[in-house]
Length: 166
Image 1 (tube, rainbow, N blue to C red):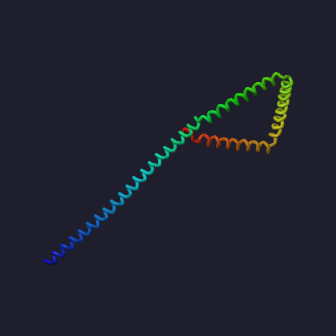
Image 2: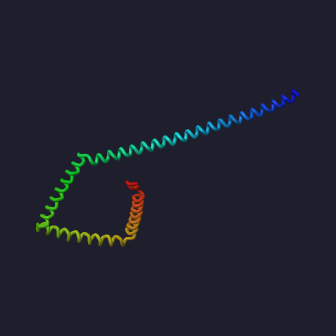
Image 3: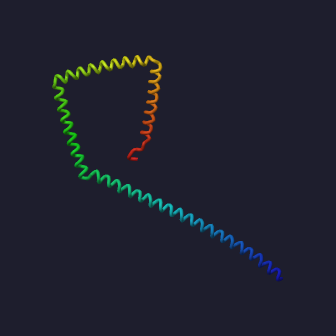
């Protein structure tokens, strides 16, 4: 009978031991999961705080820029610059009008136009003659293709560049 009792106690103790080990594993796992969940929650909180601070900095910067644009010294500089530009424009128009009235200037203008036309015609003749040479022609074609390619790439970069409003 004593044997049966010891045998029963041995079976019970191993069951209790197994149950305790499973409970300890469960508690460890739960604590690990809770730690991870708390870490994730803390990361979310910190990220939210950073986004909020970035928004505040953006708003303060925007407000400072608007205040600067509306500031009296800047408005005075803008006003003075406009006055100077208006004066220069008016004086330039007066000089052009006076020059148009002067016969010598008219004659010189006509002669300059005639000379420019002659130079342009001679340049066209030289260009046409040069294009008859295969080496020159292929070089010009290559330069044109390269220029077109570069222009296309620049256009693509400019088109892909984000607008200020975005």
